[in-house]
Image (cartoon, rainbow, N blue to C red; front, top):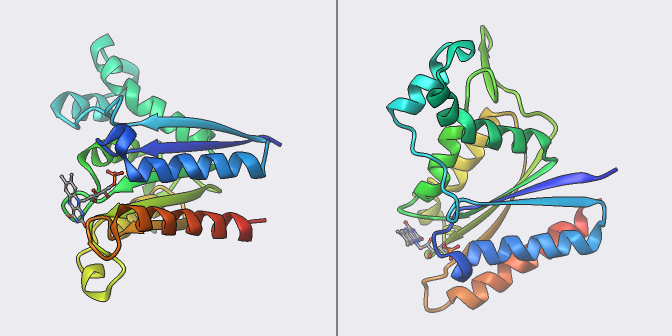
Length: 207
Ligand SMILES: Cc1cc2nc3c(=O)[nH]c(=O)nc-3n(C[C@H](O)[C@H](O)[C@H](O)COP(=O)(O)O)c2cc1C
C-alpha cells in the first residue's frame, strides 16, 4: 500500500538551509528503503502561510456556510494544509530554532492548522486531537547545543512542537537534532553529519 509523506520546511535560508538538507536526506533515504511512498514538500519559505490576522479570525470563526467569497478565499490555505495533513501517514517538520522557538514561518503555519472541529475538538474530558494514526518526525536545528541540561531549560522549540502535535492528535514523534551549528567545536558540518546518522539509525530500526 502506498504511504504519503508530507515534508514541511520552515527555514528562510532556502538552498543553504541545514534543516532542509537533512529533510532532503531523509526523503532520499526513505525513498531508497521503500518505493511505495509518495512525497509532498511544503516549503514555507517559498510559499509562506498567512499571518493570523483579523480577516482570518473572522473567516475561521464565522458561520462556515455563510462565508463571503473573500472570507472563503482567506480560509483556503488553512483548508489545504489540513487536507495535506489528513492525507499524510508520515509528517516531517524541518524546523530551525529562531529565538528559542520555531521560525515565524513555522508559527504562522501552526496557527493555520490548529483549528477547532478540524484538527482538534473539546469535550467535557478536555481537548482531543483529530489527526489520529500518524507518525511525525521533527528535524530540529539550532546554533547552540540544545541537548545540554542548561540549554534544554530554554528550549521552546522541540517541547513546543511536541505539544502542538499532541494537541492535534499526533503522539508518535521522532526527533532528529542538528545542534551546535554555531559552536566552534561542533559547527554545521559535524551537526549535519550527526543528524544524518540519526536518520540512518531511525530508518535502520524502523520496520
Ligand atoms: C533570526 C535567527 C534567530 C536564531 N535564534 C537562535 C536561537 O535562539 N538559538 C540557537 O541556538 N540558534 C539560533 N539561531 C541559529 C539557527 O537555529 C540556525 O542557523 C539554524 O538552525 C540553521 O538551520 P537552517 O539552515 O535550516 O535555517 C538563529 C538564527 C536566526 C537567523
